[in-house]
Image (cartoon, rainbow, N blue to C red; front, side, top):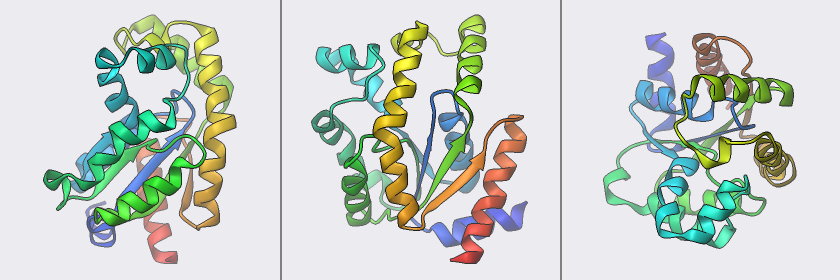
Amino acid sequence: MEEKIAKIRAWLGTGSINVFGLPFSGKDTVGLRLAETIGAKFLSSGLILRAAEAEDKELAKELAAGNLAPTDTFRRIIMPYFGRADLAEFPLVLSSVGRWEGEEYDIIDSAAKGGHDIKAVLLLNVSEDEAKKRWEVSRTIGDRGTRSDDKEQRIIDNRINEFITKTMPVIETYRKRDLLIPIHATGERDAVFMTVIDELCKFIDKH
């Protein structure tokens, strides 16, 4: 395991790994653990945008309905992170940063300019049924606080639709650039994480 982690660190440098998947696929869970393991900084677009809700009523309204943040809002809030001096010397693990078709080009460009080139993109694959089951469990145990975008089935359905219609074209762009790593993400968290590490190492060996 230590050798694999060392390989990933050496390959990544100050680059970035972006993590995508349906709602409740484990993006933040996997992303944060990966960042901690390889000594990277973790940036979640969801966490950053939800933190900005209090200052932006229109954004709060969009997120509460399960919609993606408008691209102009996304650019204004998220893009400056790639040029921050306090992140310059670190690799980045991104959780679903640039989710609306067209935003991926902004991310690719801004990440490169900040010295954080996108080196790989993980796609955590779970079925829609699995995502909804995880939502039901999460709602029962209350492990996600009072998030407005987790409240109702119709909102979750909309979030899934947003992913299919707006984010899948983003993922296809990364696939065409040979950056995509599909991950079977149904299973125990430790097993999924080990799959991530193994698949990253295979990806490095191929490239």
